[in-house]
Structure formats: C-alpha cells, structure tokens
Length: 187
Image 1 (spheres, rainbow, N blue to C red):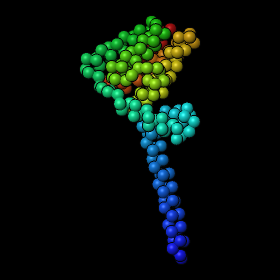
Image 2: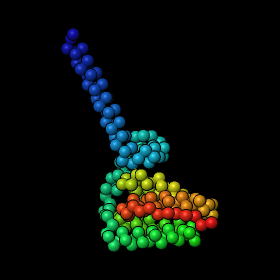
Image 3: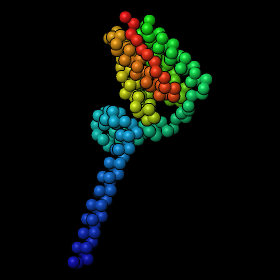
Image 4: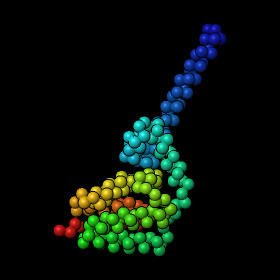
C-alpha cells in the first residue's frame, strides 16, 4: 500500500470512530436529560421544541437558569406555617372546593417564592420546577389546567378533587414534609 492509501484509510477510521463517539455522547446526554427531567417532561420538551436537539438545548438552558437561583430549604417555622396553611386549605375543600383549589394554587406559589423560585408566568414556573422536581411537574400542570377551567366554570367537583391531589403532591415535594391527607368530596 502506498502512503496515500494508508493516510486515506487512517482518515476514514478516525472519522468513523469520531462519528461513533459523537453518537454515544448524544445518547448519553439524552439519557441523562431524560433521567433528570423525567420521561414526560422530556417528551413534552421534544414536542414543543420541534426536535430532540432543540429540546435538549432548552432543557440544558432551563437547568442552567435554575442553578442561578438562590434556592433554599424551608426553615422549621416556615415548614410548620405552610403545613398548617395546607391543612386549612384542604379542610376548606369540603365546603368550598372551587375556592380551595384557588387557595391551593396561591399557597403553592407562595411556597415556591419562599424556596427561592421566581414566580413569573405559569409556564416558566413549571419549567423551573421541572429541573429539581421532575416527578411532580406534570401534576402541577394538570392542577393548573383544572384551576383555569374552574375559573371559567368548566370544572366538576371531581376535577377539583383531582386538582387538590395534584397540588398536594407538589406541595409535599416542595415542603419536604410528606403527609397523607384524605380528600373527600362534599355531597
């Protein structure tokens, strides 16, 4: 073989190995992002982003944005205050499910602010929450959708009960005080 042939073969081998390395790195990045954000949020980002590449870039930007926040754990007194407030909201559900859902939404927003999350528009809040609380982000989206329908008078009592359960899941995750609450619908 001539030197030129050896150089061409070496170049092809380097290109093939480089291509395999890039594919493996992309697969690893996808696996890590899917793990960090959860399958549902990852797929949502792909659907909204138009491509996996765009979605992954936005998910990376989202994670960087949240890293810039000064998030903090709740103090004992804040945790107690929020747990007490949640118990009151939940008790209010029996007599006024619609207003209790609104109160739950407001309480979760206050809790997020206390923890250090910016509380701008809903989609940004949900995106921010998805970075550190991926397992409850879909619950938050579902609860908010029901609360929005409730404002228009389009949510049933069963829908409102589901919204409270979704808010409770997020509340427990953010407050760090998992408790079981029993939601019963008033007849």
